[in-house]
Length: 245
Image (cartoon, rainbow, N blue to C red; front, side):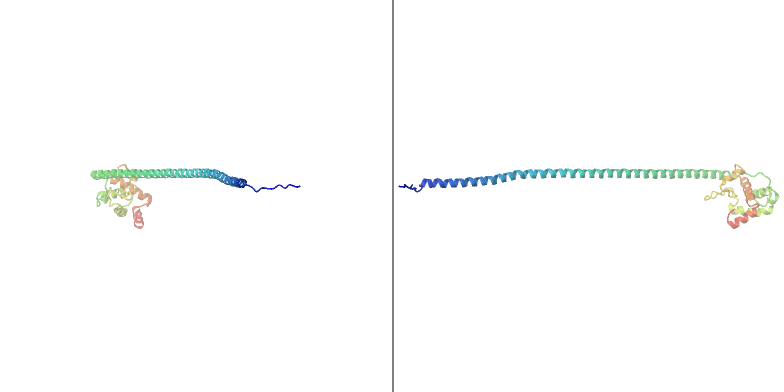
């Protein structure tokens, strides 16, 4: 006889325990899944600050480089500006020095000119107040019709070997040049005396008293005419044609 084992239906307690076991497994699985996600999220969050820190470090280094370049540019501009300023100051100083030197030279020249004019005026005043040196030489009777410097000129012309017929030419020539005034002076050219010697000091070759002695001036003038024109009439002709002799 075969005895069959009869299975008794599960009790209420067994059913509950099985259900709890299945729920427990699932809960554990879910918990593990959540933990994994959370761990990944945590790990992700942990890596993000590291990446952010790296980017910040790179950015800070770039800022330092830019600041250094900007500083170098400003330093270069500053050096260039100072160099330009020094050059400008040097040019200004050189220009001011040149202008000051020019002004000083002009002032010196003006002072010298004024001193010379003052001296010349004093000498003219002295000459005017002192009068001419008197002529003590012989006067031919043929010259008595003239007076003053003209009379002296006639006598000296004859003494130099010219004929009396030359005196009218000499008379007109020196009337035109100076009016026979031994103090006649051309302020623009510097010509002086009866023959209007240019410059007047040329007449010093005829005598040291050339400024005040009509005879000294006439002797020099007759020598000039003879050496250049041969006769007073030829000198007068040249003066008429050209305007001077």
